[in-house]
Image 1 (cartoon, helix red, strand yellow):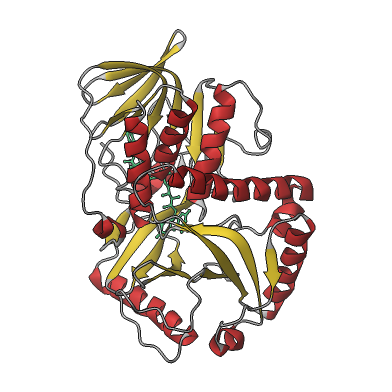
Image 2 (cartoon, rainbow, N blue to C red; image 1 turned 180 degrees about the vertical axis):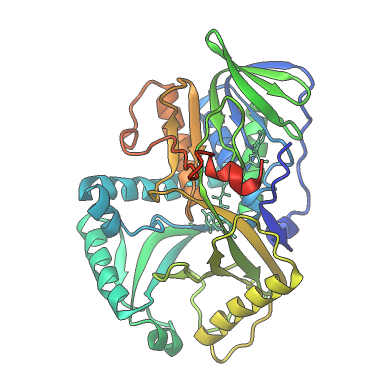
Amino acid sequence: MNEHKLHDGTLYWPKTMSFFPTYPSLRERAMTQVAIIGGGMTGAICAATLAEAGIPAVLVEEKRVASASTAANTGLIQFSSDIMVSELADRIGEMDAVAFYAHCSKAVNDLGLLAAAIPQDGGYRSRSSLYCAASDADASKLRREYQMLRRHGLDADWGFPAGVGPAFKARYPAALVTHGDAEINPVRLANGLIAQAARCGVRVYEHTGVANVRKRGDWFVLACDGGEILARTVVRATGYLPGIEGAAESEPNLRRTFALATPPNSVPDEWNRDLMMWETARPYFYFRTTPDGRIVAGGLDEDMPDPSTGERALRERTDKLLAELGALFPGSRFEAEYAWCGAFGESPDDLPFIGEHPEMPGLFHALGYGGNGTVYGMLAASMLVAHLRGETHPLAGLLRPTQVRRTASGEPAVKKAFGV
Ligand SMILES: Cc1cc2nc3c(=O)[nH]c(=O)nc-3n(C[C@H](O)[C@H](O)[C@H](O)COP(=O)(O)OP(=O)(O)OC[C@H]3O[C@@H](n4cnc5c(N)ncnc54)[C@H](O)[C@@H]3O)c2cc1C
């Protein structure tokens, strides 16, 4: 069992659940076409997508579904990544960068279709994003970004929309608005997708950790706590947790980040709740609202993998986030009803690790490192289905399934960070 902590403090989303569906642990041998390891948002999206495609699958989760990084997620679903499309174009060429952004935009939409197909309200609501330039230099970068987005048909407007108050304009020299984004309640949505997958025949097991994965002929054998699974394809949707023996490493650069939720009915009247806000500074400050009128805000990333901060440090960071909010809405006073810290993984090239492992045919990585993990989870599910159907997904040549970051002594960096 992985004992590594992915969050600390008081989380908001689990409090919005009146009932948590539960699943048995594995006590036998199960055979299936696809075994998904990990019951977070990525595993949930993969399970629901496979169920919809009629592909037999088993999902195993070593703790409770949607309780790891998914529970700390602030639920902003944006087609724009931590790296601007114009910056990505400088690195990998405009055609590939735009193809990546276009597929992320499609993924936001696909997630909306999945969310609409389940009876539970997973909080998926279409939103636009206000992207603010943190400096004059960033204003020119943002202008270039806007031009590239528009040139390729990605929906964006230049400037502050009506209703955005003077404090924003005093602080940020420029802004653009992207359309076609969304917000979710990650815990409700992941639980809803897994419940839907289970209704459609996906076998779901909780409290069932996969200790190792071995190849036996054409089958993968997954050794679990209470039994084993035989599968033709294995999907590694384990988030930021260290690898499983035999399932190959893909190491994120681990940091920690902070978030809070204000009490209900605390959104200032002047704010347009259809907007989510973020900025070009790195790390960035961001916020969104919830249906009951809370603000969920986050930022202040730190170069430490362990989210256990202690009460005092969490209070200090929470006060800083509240001060950021207060500066943008000088007429309002804010407090935090919930405040938490979460571990957060980034890939060295800002792209997710998705695809079949080159040295282990049949092992599919769905590791959406970066601030857009949910969108990458949806992208992974679409690429998985294409892979299982023998089709070549347009992003298959661009996204790599793996990259191990090693320390100077040659040790995988994430193992060192976690001390395992
Ligand atoms: C504060 C914060 C804010 C964030 N905000 C956003 C946001 O606004 N938008 C966004 O898209 N992303 C955001 N993220 C990132 C997001 O949380 C993650 O990208 C996403 O939740 C990852 O989902 P996942 O399913 O890949 O991982 P997880 O939710 O961590 O799920 C992985 C699961 O795999 C299980 N597992 C691991 N190893 C095994 C094993 N050996 N056997 C069985 N099960 C195993 C774990 O127990 C876990 O439940 C945020 C993250 C943090 C910390």
